[in-house]
Image: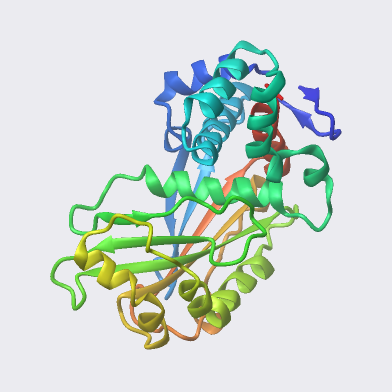
Length: 305
């Protein structure tokens, strides 16, 4: 282990070594975790996702996957920004001149050292937590009866306004032909296995702000099928009317030392706007050291800068 410039211990595994390990296991975050369904006797079922190995190599592989996906999304995958960042990062060299200036503008909103050190800024661990949810959701095997129609990537910065995650499913045979779930992401870095407060905050936030978040979404620049566009245009209406096509979810990223034995069992008391079966879903993503892992992601993002 080594120390980064923020004084946090990170794995001494190069980006090239991390990529090699990621490729060897399958190249996806889901290849490095195990999933366990929980809460079958509750109104809100949930899933526990735990990293498979505490080895520095597997941790680095997961960190590289997250860092690479974030930079690909932030830069739009363009050769001048993403391509040069990736090449320089894997070769362990620094970008210079205007290439450095360009790439830094994409990376610094969350990953610049000063931003990461601000106590009021949940950007580092919070942003990484949102990407854990996104990648785990994206790479799950598709349900043929309920394929994902829309899955938006996380916001550019975790403190940006609006909802944290949205999944739209195509469901033939239902009243609207689609359904959706609006997600709220939280992090919990306490050592005790009591993330109840973070979970409670997620549900109450959805209850009070869900319709506002959905009303903030804009679809004018999206290429959508006519029936999809009609559905997403009425998301806020469906939420307010408590239709069965609408649902909520809360995801919490935390340390493995804080994995709860019971969770989301009180969700129906805090998320009171939707009561139909399947209206609620929970997710707990456990990393052996969430804050440290977020700094490892940052290390890879910042290697070429």
